[in-house]
Length: 140
Image (cartoon, rainbow, N blue to C red; front, side):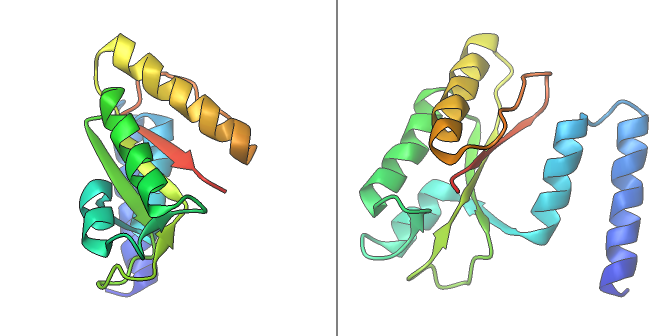
């Protein structure tokens, strides 16, 4: 199967899930972005990279770890580093964190507040909590 056939079939499946009400439109977009990028558990990726390498955007390694831990303190189910990640994490950075959102309202609010803080530095449009499964934090 060629890349174009794969993406066409994958888009068809995502569209069908959305039409059946099984997939929120925000999650549809995130699923498409996930197909084009690598995702790794952010904490594991940063720990494997060590102090001198893996970072989130222009944060230091320690600040990057703190950002991931803050997501978990606020209730994230999973935090993934997203980008073009080589197998060797050395000398690598990402500019996106993918948060799998919890179901409880209080934790979701805390995570959307974190997005607001990051968006203030980055200038991107904020998401609205509509019951989606994911929150994509952009550090650009």
